[in-house]
Image 1 (cartoon, rainbow, N blue to C red):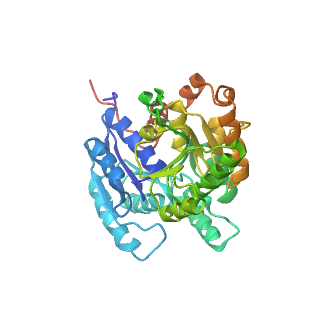
Image 2 (cartoon, rainbow, N blue to C red; image 1 turned 135 degrees about the vertical axis):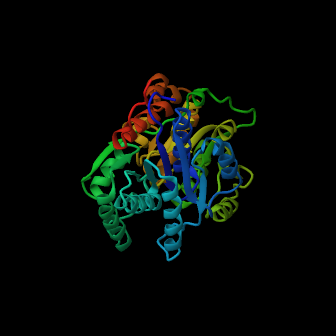
Image 3 (tube, helix red, strand yellow; image 1 turned 45 degrees about the horizontal axis):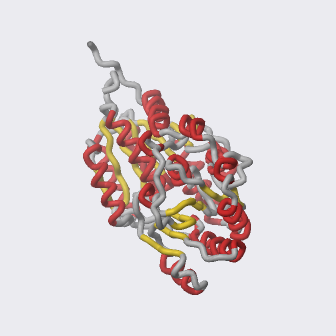
Length: 384
C-alpha cells in the first residue's frame, strides 16, 4: 500500500486491442501494486486469442472485475441498452475515478459519471482521446459532428489527459482550447522491457506490427518494401504481424506483387516475440497519437523507421532522419534503403538510450496519473 486510502478506479474503453489496451493494462498493474482497487469495462465483440491471453494475465489484478459488453465503433441504437447496462454496473462499483479512453470509452465514462454526480456521487470523470475522434477531418460533415460532440462533452469532464503534446495541440486545433483542466502524461514501458531482444538467426530485414487497417499503413509498408528491394537490387525479407479488417486485402496485394515468399504474415503476438524475428521496425501510420510500438521497439534495442505523424517526432526527435512523410511509400522506401545500407545509421539516428529511458517509463507514467487521480478524488490519510 502507498500510505493513503485506496482508490476505486474503473477504466472504460471500447476495443481491447492495440495501444489503448496496452496503456490501460500498464496502469492497472502499477496502481494495483500500490493497493488500489481497479477494474475494466470494454467491448465484448473485438479481440482474439492474443487478447484473451492478455486478459487472462491481467485478470488477477482486477479487483473491481472485468466486464465486457457489446459496443460498436460507430454510434448506433445498440448503444442505448449498452449504456444502461454499463450504468447499472458502474453504479454498483461506486468508483472514485472513472477514466474513459478513446471516443466511445470517453463518452461512456462522462455520461455515466455525470449521471452518478447528479445522484451525489463524488466520482471524478477523466477522458484520454488516444487519437480517436481527433483523427476525423473537420472539413467533412462527420468530422464536424464528432468535434462538436467532443466540445459538448467537455462540460462533463473533470480532466482531459493527453498522451503527448501533439495530441494536446490537435485537440486545441480541432475542438478548441480546453475549457477544463488538462494534462499531458507521456506513455511509457516497463523497466524489464528495456532489455535488448536478440535477433533470431533467420530474422527478417523489416517488421510491421500492428492493426491491419489502412489508418496504420500496412499498404504503405508493402509498397515501400517493394521499392526498397528494387533500389537495393536484391531480394529482401519482411514480416507483417497483426490482425484486422483489411488482412485479406493486404495478402492479395502481396501475392499480386509477387512478394508472397518474401513478406510473411503472422497473427498478433507479444511485441517482443515479434522483435526477435526482424532487424528493423517500420511504423508507416497515416495517423497516430503516441504509439506504444515505437517506444517498445526502441526499448528492445530495435531501430525504428516511422511516419512523421502524431507524437512519434516527440519520441524519435522532431528532426530525426528516421521520419518519413505519412502515406508516402517513396519517402519511406528512401529511409529504408538508407537504414539497410548504412551500418552507422542506427547509432547516428536513434535516440540516446539513457535519455529515452528516463522519459518513457511506465513507472513515471503511472506515478503522474496517480497524482492526478488523487487531486481529483482526495481521500483522508489512514491513521497510524
